[in-house]
Image (cartoon, rainbow, N blue to C red; front, side, top):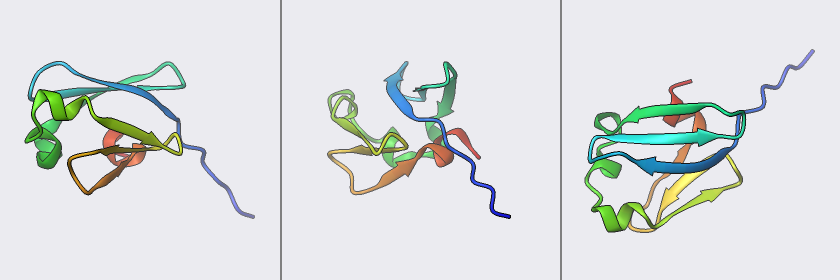
Length: 77
C-alpha cells in the first residue's frame, strides 16, 4: 500500500527584514522562515528578493540565484 502526502502549495512570500521570510501556503498557514538557514536568499538585496517565481506550486526560485527551494525545505519537513 502506497501513501502519498500532498504538500501545501506556496501562494506568496514576503520579507519582513533581512532575516525573516514569511511563506504563505494555500492551507491558510503562514510559516516564518529564518533566513540564517538559507544564506543564499539572505544575501539577496531587497530588489532581488522581489524577483521570485513559484514553480509547480511547491517550489520557489529567485531570478538572481541558481537554486530551487521546495516547500518542504522552507517549512522544515
